[in-house]
Amino acid sequence: MGKKLKSALTSKWIKTKVLMRSTEISPLIPETVKFSKVNLKAMLLKYGMVYVKPEYGTYGNGVMKVEQSRETYGTEYKYQSGTRLKTFRTFDAFHLSLKKATRGRSYLIQRGIVLLKHGKHRFDIRVMVQLSPQGKWETTGLIGRVAEKGKIVTNYHSGGKLTAMEKLLSPYLNEAQQAQMLRILRKLGEDTGRFYHKKYPGFRQIGVDVGLDRSMTPWIIEVNTSPDPYIFKHLPDKSMYRKVMAYRRANEKKKNTK
Image (tube, rainbow, N blue to C red; front, top):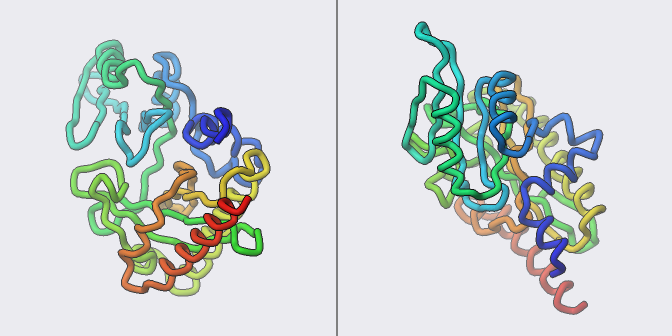
């Protein structure tokens, strides 16, 4: 794999910049900027809540939920990393602590989306998109990921619970609305796959992490270019898992015969 492609596959910043060029997809990408003191101040002033995440990294490691709120004694700043919450009265002390937490690595600041909940826990959706044996981008899997109690990330490897879409959507949408939402998510996944593939044709599958807010807007939180296909094995209905694996095998075979 070339250096340029490898960087594009792993850098959240590059992936975001590529997708921002799409007029269809860009309105559904939360504003994202590089981590700096000036950007942190501006983003908190604009949104109140943001996520600070490493540019390179997997499984939700290093992701922090960062908030600014008005209190009777003035402005309060806080951030959560894992299950630990830190609170500050001054922006400088808050920024210094956050900067230390980044340990000199490249970090991004992303507008915080208030996700829908399943019970008391926030959830997001993994949309699995693969090149079909016929060479077309196709959404082959949809699965919900529910955050573990007290945690901010939904990732399965960080304790997130894998859940069928119907279970997550039924408290919010009737059957017809659910079917429509699944169509929107499938199309969003396929549009993302096609657009990213134009720029970097060297990969055959992506995982699009989508968060729904109260207005049922599907926000693209992240694009994973080496998604875990085995998470679909956890669904009671194994048909999705079988399809994901069949496409994966077909793509591996194509890659190996080149």
